[in-house]
Amino acid sequence: MIAVFIATFMTSVEVTIVTTALPAIISDLHGLAFQSWIMSAYLLTTAITTPIYGKMADTLGRKRVFQWGVLLFTIGSFLSGISPSIFFLVAARAIQGIGAGAVMPLTFTIIADYYSFKERAKVMALNNTAWGLSALVGPLVGGFLVDHLSWHWVFFVNVPLGLLVFVIIAIGYTESNFEKRQLTIDWLGILWLTVGLVALLLGIQSLDTNLAISMVLLVVAIVGFGLLVHQETRFNDPLIPPEMFRVKTFNVQILTATILSGVLIGFQVYLPIWLQSLYRLPATGAGMVVTSSSVMWLTASFFVGGLIARFVPKRVIMLVVTIQLVFYLMLVFANIHFPFWMFYIISAVNGTGMGIVISMNTILSQHLVSDSLVGSATAILTLGRSLGQTVMTGVYGAILNVVIRMQLHGISFSKVNDVISSSTNVRVTNRSMIDGIILNGLHSVFTLSAVMMVVVLVINFADPNKKIIK
Image (cartoon, rainbow, N blue to C red; front, side):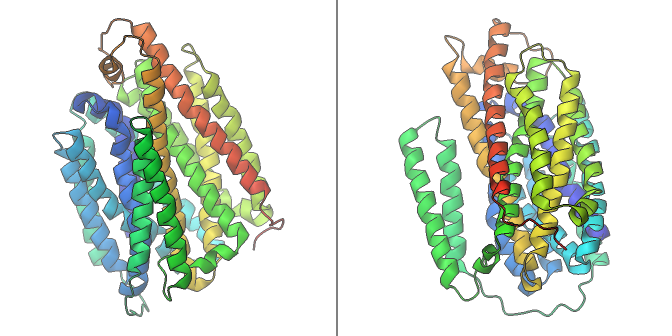
């Protein structure tokens, strides 16, 4: 469990540090047009490899797969730190994602292996302590490194952490009563999953640059996912077992976690950009605001066990998401003089809601399938969360770029790029006009987030389960 806690800290601190440093990275590498790929490359490779590693862990054992993931994650972190260009950084982030594809789902799977349904909520809440610590430390350390050293160091921080995790796993983690089985790889399933995901993301990324190519790629994605479904229904040992999806409440949990993860990545990436670009905050100050979300996520997760035991899940989820929606609508209509202290409140409400709902989704998705499918169910949930973040990172980036370009009216795109920076010393002409352009772009991002929350409410309203799950 020590290995699990530290691994959780390592992978989660990666997100909180990088999002804080993102404006500085964009400015230094002149990468506004490709900014969404910094997160998308990481999330895409994580999404593709997650079900593959889940299958390998069930046959080869958790430990070997876990160590391999930690090693790749550490190498990717080092390469990201030495990146001389935006394209090198994107490639290094892809390597990080391949490693994270093993580490992230296996932390949840190991917890499910060792603890019963009643104990699982408490253990996951304790595991969230590692996540909460990273969320608290990450933005502060990331902001300090950006302000006083350079953005390169936000990646180097993960190198000693990765080495430490690798050693602890090697020494302290022993698999008990694990019987290795013959590894049967669903190659066609992997192929069609990869084709679908890659085509989907490339199509979304191309929306604001080449609509025709984007439409072709999206058609390819639909075909790829269709062939994936066909393959999984006829293969004896499928990559993604179809029988899991026969439980409608399980499907609701997966869809809810997927969509809300897409909402969450928008908050994590674009709220720091809002604060640094429009409120002239340094990276450390912006990180402090986002940290309140993470702290409340941690606090709220300790109440999940009691909520599951006393209330119908759909009612809890609908109430919590409705409250979140109200506060997101404030961001949609906020002007340039929106009170700064309100960002702390919105951040805290966001963290509380995500901590309750996504923790419930994780626990229930494992409980609603047979014991033999717990590993696969965990991988599917992790895949859904990664896919939600991957797709929406591309969508948000495309929307932001399109809205900004539509409002330039003689102002160069590079000037807007300069303003989206962690530096408080940026001096450009027409600053008020550029601020308005950025604000409208951010409004479009959070408007889409609000729409997605409405979709979550509709999905949970349709959940047929009306009883407390025991």
